[in-house]
Image (cartoon, rainbow, N blue to C red; front, top):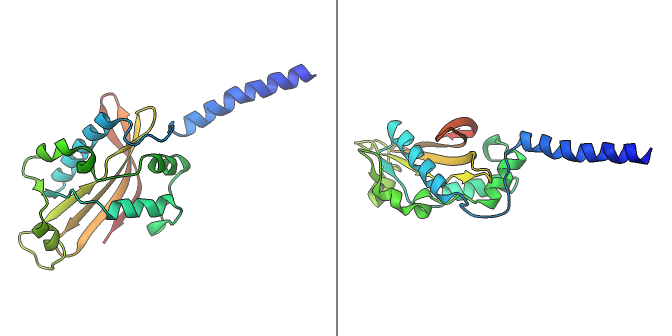
Length: 189
């Protein structure tokens, strides 16, 4: 009888971790930017996506994205969004920082027609009726799971006339290309 119970418990111990592994990506121990080359490559891809969407300048200043994510990690749920347990753990272990702080070489590899934002650009997004319109993109370095196959990317845009928005996306590695898989939240002003 005891042997049957032990065999049953042993089988459950094998199945339970497998079930958990299928439910959420492996996150692992705290290691900021553990897949730095992959994170920088994904960051460059997101820059190109933003430039295709109209962003003409990229901001290398930190603050809003980091503060926003810190509130979400700590349980303060801005704008009603909810992080899953694996998302919260990943963002806690790999706190977002500005992409250009972590991958400074990307400042020299901006998409065609884009430039780094200047102080004048940052001031322009605060004014109504700014012509020509300024669209500034801000991207946090992607947080990549331990297995290197899933990433969270926080991105924001600001534009003249006090407009802007931000999103937290899940990207999945499909073959050799990162594909936007899901939106965790979006905010628009």
